[in-house]
Length: 559
Image 1 (tube, rainbow, N blue to C red):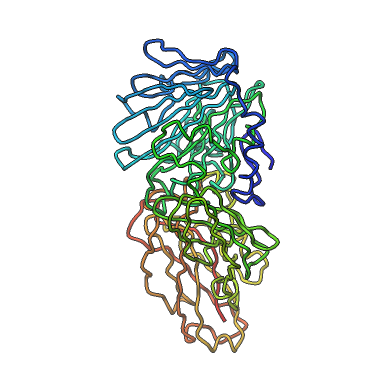
Image 2 (tube, helix red, strand yellow):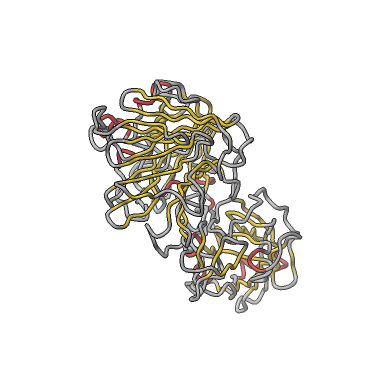
């Protein structure tokens, strides 16, 4: 597994939980710690608990509200910008904050209403382990933000707006003088794609190593803000429920640990990654909602048949209380998920990001639920249908369509985007790359697709399918063929109600619209092009890129 300064990792061959057995060995390395580390201990300065790990890291936690008020590494203060601390949400306010030491571990506990939050420091480590137990919706979202002083880590990445103040949407999407856009939303990454996020400069790396997100919502392909950087400083996030682009109900309970980690410039130790990290040292600390490894189970699948080997397959578990996922092995589809909370789950097999198989699974504490070979029926994969023509492929993403890659880290108005208008000719060889990944009512509605039919094809009725991955403001496609036949306006499927297409995410609920086109709609002259017009219809939305819109997965005309 490789890392880079911005935290990107190659997860394509990674199976969640396969490294669990190596956990004990991993602890012999950078996480070993020592109760005798010089300087390890804590003090009370009146307003804060002050903890020295004995390894160069000194942190302070407010006794009033549980904010992290100071983060000093090797003599340099990293915490804070704009007079703000690091904390849950935008700060909890008045809370009960306590401290306890257990051998080489110091635990600070924060109680605010029904919410419980924890900081743990270990002797000899430059890490802070955090857990958050959100019991209900009395706290709006679930995020922790590490606020970092200005000037320590400067970059000009998509999720930075250090060098620009001109806004193009709301107050959080910015444009540079060269027309490139920046926003804290533009992380590029899905949850499954990264283990850590942060910066490195001057021989120091500051990172958040994410938790396993078992209490988060949205599944393995969810995208959310991970970090930002502006003129006043930067922020690193652990987002568990943000309320934007959410496709699932919020889950409650204890989440963690996630880790604030300092290094001497390199990536954080892989021993801290959620699939590797073991925290037996925390089993007896009294953390509310904590379930040790022996209270968890495992799910393993022998393999998956019926796969399209051109795609990566992911297996997810989702229940009302927790979620997990793992990548199926390319050669045979084997998968494994460890440290799963006991309960009943829906297991979903994804081709790319498209669900192609579901089943029910029960997990018990201390046991492995072994599944036999899972078969994906041919009919479950829409790519297997015989077609007259197809634009794109069915994988649950807009991948391959015009501007699709750019849209995970830029606004649609970005100067690097190809024009959103333009028609498509079947047989040109560029059907997919010429077709825009997003369609909006106020931008490129009315796009035309030209295609020819044989005499036999023109004599028959056909089904047209348009697959979408999400929509904004109930935008959905209505089609017209040759100006003579127009479909009914389809009902809108359930989709997230917040911005998606303009904040780096095409992820919503995959849906397929089908249109039964009668033979009378086709041209009988086989030398002429039939013309398919696709309009976006909705009574909602505003203008431009915030008008009603939708993201395209694939379009095809069945035989």
